[in-house]
Image 1: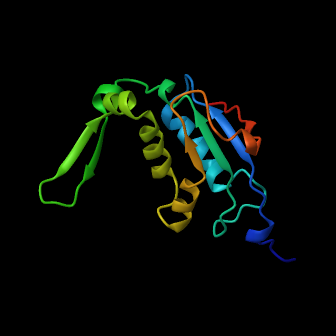
Image 2 (image 1 turned 90 degrees about the vertical axis):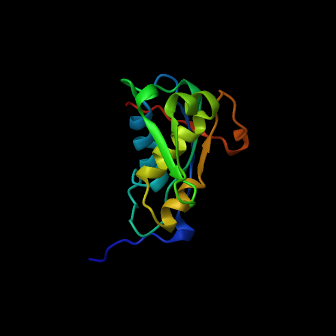
Length: 144
């Protein structure tokens, strides 16, 4: 018996819309990374990019459990000596709530070209409106 190998021409990508209101950030990010990677499909193969498009609305209404708003930091380095920057998550959620989702999902995807390609299929919106009605996205209710 032969193993089935999906081909990139045969992959059909769907569009999903997720409402993040009142859901924990990390648990929702794990489910979205699962869909972006394509692991929910029976034709999944780790070497083929077969994930779907995901639209997340209401990013500003997501929950950070515990004291993460005041105790969790995002660190990055500018490349110059001594230029390690940091930003608390309450500032991130106030200014750019999409960034918190982007960082969480990016960390859960593979750190190679397939993960970078999967991130291009993610659309994040702080409010309830999105501009992808023409793609007829189906509402995805995630039990987290």
